[in-house]
Length: 568
Ligand code: TEU
Ligand code: CA
Image (cartoon, rainbow, N blue to C red):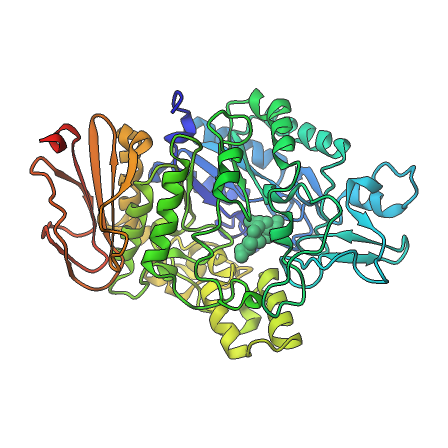
């Protein structure tokens, strides 16, 4: 691998501002709330904060519908508040990356309002978006929106449809129009001048639509074509990202990560190629799609658990396929995914801490840049709402309307179970700081219900307990900063581990050091002999002693030994 980049040793902490800390008594998290908690984030030891969108927005989709890219949503604060956050973070040695949401804008954005105004050729803004004539009086093609319903909305005035892969309030920008690209690159350079440290790029794999906008394949008893499959990794996407790199990214010592729905290994090797011509890394979606419903019409909505063999096989594939060619991102959680301890771990009081630590170590010793989502370091769990009225997330509410009410594909009772497992609101309940009202998030009723288990699960309790999940993450981050092998070591799954239903075991090796990671994914006690070299030292574990070949429920232990001790 070329000379090491700063972001290859970095660990990122994701802050979802709406649910992190309220500072002005309205029950909604804000920028001054984040400023209040910078010490906490610094104490964890991370290097970068990724901020979900804080820009002007009608907030139809959690800020992912932006009406002004260069102004702050007053609900979150002012530009002065942001400038203070950035300068205070930098003073503490924390970098900040922003969220770039340019596959689509808000329908309230000035560009779209002008685009909507007239379909006359002299309207320079018409072609900023994707307008098409009806086909046989219907939508131009069969694409379905990610948020249910068709991906097209009809505009009476012009007699045309406009495309929106997400909500109708999120019209897709037409990246084929060079004016659109230049406007976006200028906006990015404007933020660069403010001193930010990079961007996470929202659904960047969807910006180049297929020529002719052909129908998409219909899977199962879906009524719409799967637009994601039809649009992902489009014909000009790499060309546009190389242009962005030339015009913006290459000018700044930034970290960039692309959220690439529908990305494959071969496409990721282009997006995140080590030649640095496009982005630094991408988020792939395969390991968070393994527990989707077997009926494609129900998409991700299911309560089935992914089994270890398929999860391991997927994570191993990405480790091996990108090694030496491109750089991985590593994540279990974000603001779109359910809480990992409830999903892949065991959130019962007996095993919540053990399994949270096991999952943390398993991921953080892999090659790539780890992302920690707010509350993950506390082992926060899913919300387990039991009525539809408790949900705020557009994707969840629209799915309920379409699949339960309209199409009656699934009963309310079953869908509510699926929501308990997969709704994005499971990630968005207020951060749990202490046992005071509303978990210390706000002294006013929060915009989304607080998880009642905050009495037991909260930052204050974690900081008071030297054996907490918080300090376990702190140690993982310290080790990543200290041990080069965690950054540059070759990943290797242990022989005969592929079929193991209980244990995930792999090594990381460079010329100096070898690490052996052994993780029990189950609540069973297992016997396995991994011939741990005599010279091996235990680097980190979630039990207090080492019973060698006896591996206890959710046990994780990581050994370190000199690579040369292997040769004998
Ligand atoms: O998410 C894109 C995306 O792929 C998600 O919609 C994902 O498929 C789904 O939520 C998981 O099931 C990005 C943002 O992260 C998300 O919050 C936005 O809603 C979306 O784009 C539109 O901007
Ligand atoms: Ca607030």
